[in-house]
Figure 1 (tube, one colour):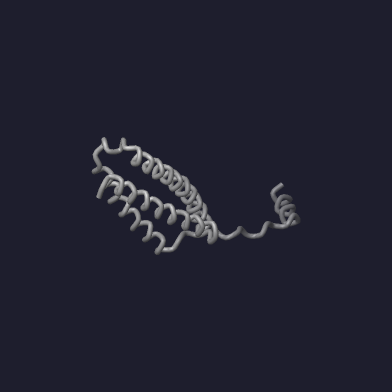
Figure 2 (cartoon, one colour):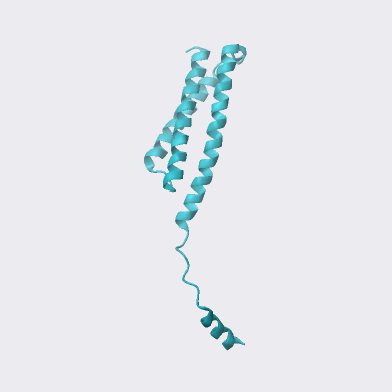
Length: 125
């Protein structure tokens, strides 16, 4: 695989990851709960592919990145990665919010009436 093909393959993987993160974001906004196991497994599989893709990028000679076509492709990939990171941060916040909402106790008992509070207060005075 040439340097350009390696970078293009990495960019395609980043596009796939971006789509996955977008789907997760839509799910979190619509259903307001933690995603199901299938989505988490899909993310794990993409993470493994990302590790392999990064290893292939590290194997590229450092001087080959100076080629204008490669630099343009790398810039597109960097832009996509920034979008992924921004969405992932938003998803983390949504996950935290929905996780906390799921563990909250149910609404508290109804408030005592004013008359009851006055009666208790008069006993203590």
